[in-house]
Image (cartoon, rainbow, N blue to C red; front, side, top):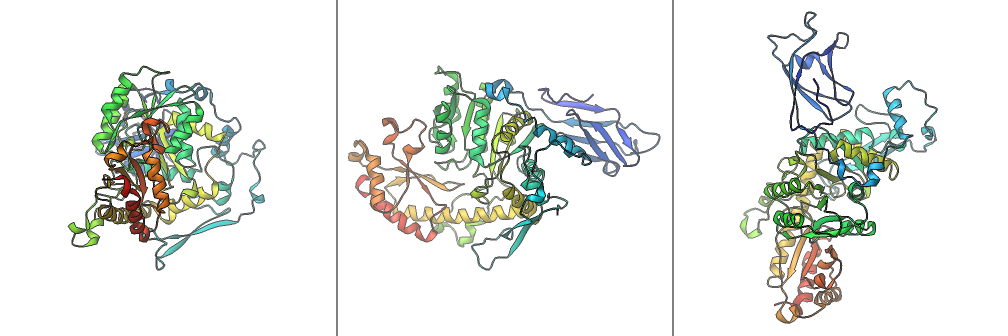
Length: 552
């Protein structure tokens, strides 16, 4: 018998005794636990093996049979024994939901959309939607670089990405669909790309995962935290963390509990210590927030071993992990000093694209305890405000319901361009070429920036060269006098401003706030992502001058 979609069994082994065969369509059907059904064509079965997908959920069936013993569609064989394996379902962590989330339901009016989607012959007098003929937009278009090239190159080839009203294609809806109200999940073609990409790159190791659209990771983070937390609760974070995350939770009355970091980010043993010795205030933490790749501000990237260590602690204490990963595709490979290569091009031979990325926390999430936040902000443009969240379906459903009463969905114009670009004009292969091009741009920036820092800042700062992202995290090597001086980091900041160079003082990234404990911690964040490469030398020379009175 089919497994119950709500069970928490580690593995569900299903022996399919019979399938319904439709002679007209030449397809076999089998009921899915979600209430819909898998469909398997006769043609695919004749190949001996196939993967059957349910159109309504992310469950998949691996279907295998012996063609010497069973003939698909044979009149004498209406039942075909098949061996099917369904991978694990997510553990049910809904008991950790906040009271608000437990009460959150889908919008009653939005729930009618499923009837219109299922039966295009329905004449709806129920939907209070504006008629698309009143939309003054006949089409939208954008001129974009060919995949793997850059618009910064005046000779680069470009193409026009266009979406027009009432001109849907096989893969992308017409413009009127993108401009209409949605159901909070995202326009189907946009979401389908996110599902396919997530499956290809991360392959979550449980079946009932899904995605839901977000307006970028800041929006996604707010929704993820609101799922589980309310005023008085405590969120686990890195000892240096993303300021927007700090400012998101503070007005909600949520406390922050910092965990020690090293060159790979959050330290599992200190996370274990924090959870194992928790004495309050308030309830024990249920959520840990982290940026595991190119952490902001430190630039630290977790190895696979470190990710597994963090995940093991989360399992031990039943924690939910919010994997905020906007820099995941900006993995740049290791830094090679210019003096160690014969050809500068040798520095960029091993860019990972999507094929050699460090596995994500989602990719090792056998329990369904990772909520992964993805965004196009760092790899297309932040103004698009487009991203997606991956999590077990019962969680993405709750986020969808939240979207329905807040953002609805990302802006339709943005979804239209992104969907057309990703599903048709670039496709997955072109998207991969674009990511390599973007990695190349940031790897060149990092390498030139590090070259200059090593030349001008020797004896003034220490740093670990990042293997991903946009940042260097400097530890200022204060001289003895400066080490004893109260307020020295504010003086250094003023000295930088007087020397016409700006870095962000470390205390601005502290979850403890600007307290005496952190104000004079000798750290600063430098971003190599935005300033012109031609200005790097000037900026670092000015920084060296600003630090001169305070360093060894």
